[in-house]
Length: 428
Image 1 (cartoon, helix red, strand yellow):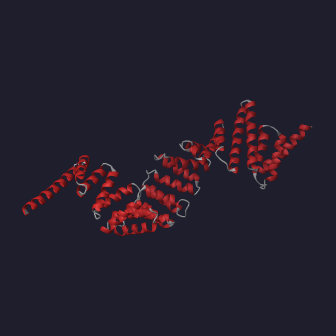
Image 2: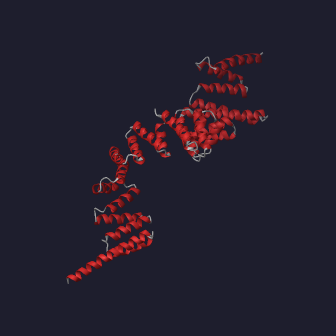
Image 3: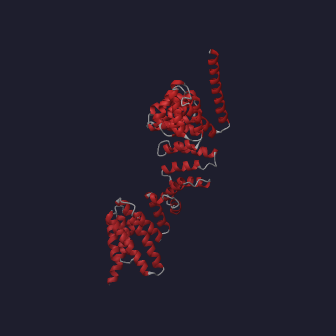
């Protein structure tokens, strides 16, 4: 009887060993489909077979059947709460699904079973960061760095935590060190964006220049340098850097957007229109559309400019800003009218001069600006030849303009004298 029991135990152990050898063989040969089918059949026979469940979860995960894999790993944990491999599988798949609270339970259990695992420390730091428990995340980062200090990924995560706690200086120091010692675009990007508009702007600008000497064919470095210059409102210099980046092959929307804005602010309207007009989302971005349409008007001042400006006018509601757009519309329609006038098309010219006049009156009504008095005076003086109205608006401008030394004031006073003489002699 005793011998019979021993034989049964031997058969059971032998069968178990053969099954595991089969699973290992299929796994080693990357035959995940057959491994999945085989283990599914085994689990159907015995739902508590931990070995079969472990290989089933592994096969499912290898084939990106992540829901099946997670469910199976959780069954293994339910049968064996100390199964480190299963705990790790649950944590890994929950992190992929961004289920950080659930993943934390498994990460904590893993740390209880096997403290000192650097990968688990890294995951604990990441989970705490995602749960906005920044101080605790920093503690796990520091614990990990004590074990393995040259770990750029952990240092980067610590910097993100410090930034979330508004300790920008400490975060910038880390990203500066990472960019210097372990240069990647990711670290340079974080350093640049958080230094821009900050006292660190010049420091990072110098670092970008130094890196550009070492890595002269990298378009990312002049792009970041250009962004720092843009934030400092050094627009002409920013254009130079963005152009260099584009010449090195970076024609991304980011480059075209910021180079376009820099060109606009530095008065290079031709480049601004070309770059901003190439952006797919320009019509959805009111400020960029404004810059694009103004740029077109300053370069071409044609019917297309007029259409773009009218579209721009319809996008805004702030009275001073809308009045400014209307003034630009007036200048554009006046230029169009002047072109027709020089070609002898008097009726078309008159139509556009009237449109210019109408836009200026509307601008003055929405938001009064003394400059529009000067614009009206010049419209009547130079284009429509209505000297009485021109005199009226030159006087209004001069009366309301405090800077008596400015060229516009002197021009207005001179035209007031000349127009009064012309009107006097016309009467005679």
